[in-house]
Figure 1 (tube, rainbow, N blue to C red):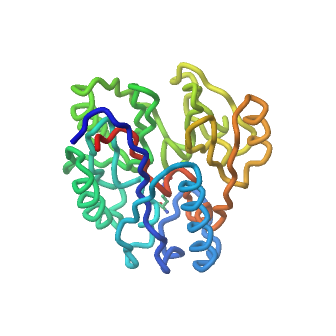
Figure 2: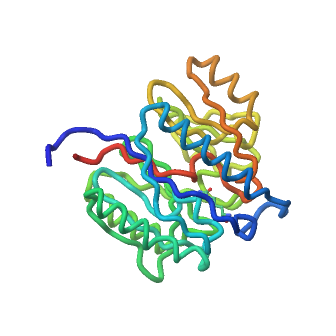
Length: 262
Ligand SMILES: NC(=O)NCCC[C@H](N)C(=O)O
């Protein structure tokens, strides 16, 4: 181990052929094209690689329709991976392979335990501030356990309400300068964040920070992409229509690991 080197690894999992059987909560179910989903996922993975991320593919879970939304299975802060306990019972089978993978990468492990529930999609890290959405998938005990796991490492864990969308990061993510972005009709409390910038499209609220000011975003938010370009960022659009039909967004298709020591 040579301490100090920052790695850029991203965990991904290819979509199940049964993607269409996944959960939908806040939107109407519409037909999903599993073959198109696979092609969109491949383009997403290529975009990560093209911007300097080493992608690590977790074992496929064809019997877990929502397994592609790998972000929900863990939270990584510094060198610690907190294995989630998904709020939706059918998704709990997804965490075992995630745990194996992060153990192999040298992370220290912690986990959310019963009666706590927590989905990784409810956790937004901005520097050492960790916002956690208390909503449909993450309960108060999950918040308490996350706080107990991360505060000794230097994090400030801030619980915020989530009632209008599936996960906190379905409502808000953050630009590289820490400004929280969100589509106002879907954000419970914009005042919970130090700086909040409204965006004009729902999926415009979701960005993956690729580094160097590049923002991986859904192609379905062109007006927001223009605004971000106007702020000096470089949007990298990907079409994820089939995942959006299952309430997914760009963030939930990968877990980015930035602070592992290799
Ligand atoms: N972090 C995320 O936004 N994950 C999306 C999960 C979608 C999946 N259909 C679910 O309901 O769990």
